[in-house]
Image (tube, rainbow, N blue to C red; front, side, top):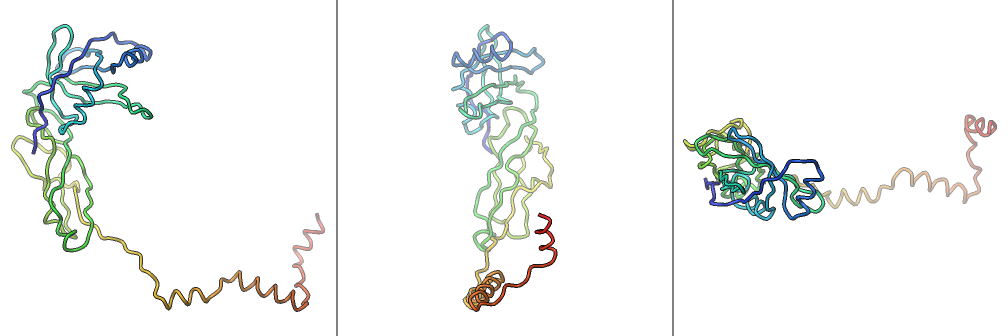
Length: 241
């Protein structure tokens, strides 16, 4: 379990909280608006460098990274990113929520599950490994947050399901997700059965019903046969028109 704590520094500048126009002006200046809260202190509106935020989110530990937040005015605190929003078309950051972190208080966080090894159900039985649950919720101290939890699927075969209860344990971590939640299992490959040459030939030789009717009508016209009289109900409809 790789730790999610990294030595990072994020700089922030306090800003006056306002309406959407104020937030738009912050973005036009090259910054992204955000809010800092937590640790029993008053929420503070800030502006941040989007490049620093993106670097943290794209790191190995991602949003579980604990970093040093420095504020103009002197405050320096441990913090982490708890929420963020992207502009759907351009993909630029719109807003970021930060939380002050007390290193001696336990947190609830979601951690990615990484599967390792080649499952026996894939290698020996020809199945497909399906990764069901990709995250697990845990409780731990900030310094003990893992970047991911690694699960060995080498012994996974048909009929066997890896669940949260089967994930590797640590005294530092408390698992909060349902122990019976499926993490991974082996599924079969659905194959389409190709028709035999005899069946394919028989199907090609048998014309569809509409073609038989059409052919019979053409033969009757060629032989000079009188067309079949219209049904009474149809004739009545024409007279009404």
